[in-house]
Length: 185
Image (cartoon, rainbow, N blue to C red; front, side, top):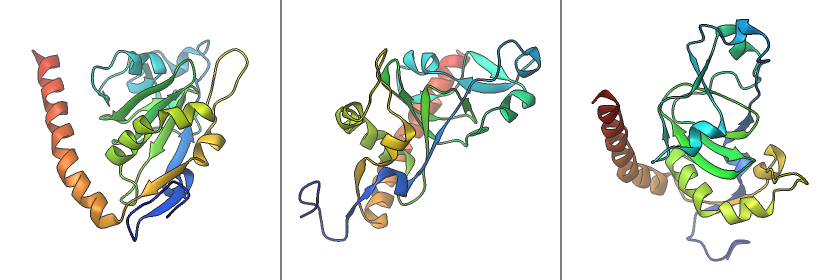
């Protein structure tokens, strides 16, 4: 028995913020052209995520310069980071296939072997109702990083997660290859 119901022996229930690094973003001033003109670094907003047919982010509409990246506290996130739009609306999901910086409307989940990215992606999708119940706001709902970090997650053993990733990673790798081929064509 656990606070989330019955779970297998050796599995645990932990706050998501204990398992992964949860980060937010920001938007450098659009009035300062040194952050944007001739930018080469992808900058993700929920709009970029809204049009994805599969939850893999391979490009963004806008690009930042090095100076622009320096203005965002989370900087440039690594490949494989899980992104969740955190407001207007909550729930767009993607795994980054490119290094990316994010705006303030996204929560980034930098994962590890104890809570790998594709497990985090599917955990987030499955628990979207719980995430929405923790959101607040008068104009539009928003889930804060602090409220998100407290949400409880079932954590399988590393062996189970490794087996899961061994099945799931090749599928997403194939999807990514097909998306890139489609872009080329």
